[in-house]
Length: 420
Ligand code: LLP
Image (cartoon, rainbow, N blue to C red; front, top):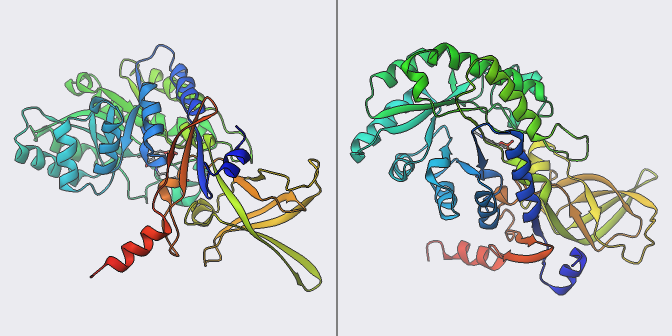
């Protein structure tokens, strides 16, 4: 059924995220194929899209999970991801979250500072675990910031980032691990940033990681214990400005580098979020008001839509551009005369702005903001007393699930209930 029909029938209210579960499954299959016959783990970064149907779909395709909170860990496990396929990143994991991860026995807690090793060891001791707590070291490969070619707010692998253990601190970390019988080092990894547009920066960082792994794990006993090497996620997607390499090309570069370092016997783990889901979700919105005004002899035109920066914050936060396309012609002929409209949301902030787009001169009734399947709903909020957007899940072209999240009425009730 065409999306405009779903809107008219009321199945799809606006604003609503719509996801294509078949395309998400196909994305996972293609990535697995990129590994050929190599042992590997694709740990889906749940922060990109934590909806049950999405996580269940990826779990069914053999994906593990990369989580960053106890809550994401709960979602992953409840959606069928085996604990032995889960890694847990994050610079400030709370004790109760570490306890949860240790209790279910995940593949590895990714250690982000030398100091964290002692805390995980202490929690393992306090819990009286009958097995060693599995940890991996997230290394900060100090990649050249400019080489990453991504937005500053989503670059994580340069040496001023809060993430990971600096290379110079690695010997100290290994020393502490040697003296901590409660923990077992099972992996080394990094994640250099997100929306990486070329393979080169990924390859260079992978080379750094594997060289370190070869130097430290070398021939010693450490090497036998390593269950994985983790080159993170970050594979860029096409937001309309050009097609980055496919995720499997990033993986192939990492596999080549791993082989050059003679570590091909250690399985490769990757942590993609955006590339599995980003292109397979869109945000559907209704045009509330078209506005034109004359300023010094020129006409300015705005399309005010019912989706705002609270629903999709990426443009406001990273100057990201999501293509906006009409869902209907509103009576205009299909080969419409395009007009440049500035598409904006209802939130009282100037940054609630989705950019200028060529849309029919006769404003459409509904528009779709494309490539919103990653970091869309998961970053939404109720600023300005707004509802959280609905989510609609399609399989075989049919609606298989609908989520009606917090409404405006819920927001009103929550706010006034405080202190009552
Ligand atoms: N692993 C770690 C440790 C991460 O921090 C992230 C993302 C990923 C994996 C997944 O990266 P991906 O494959 O999705 O690029 N909200 C931003 C993106 C933030 C990414 C945070 N970390 C955006 O909307 O562009």
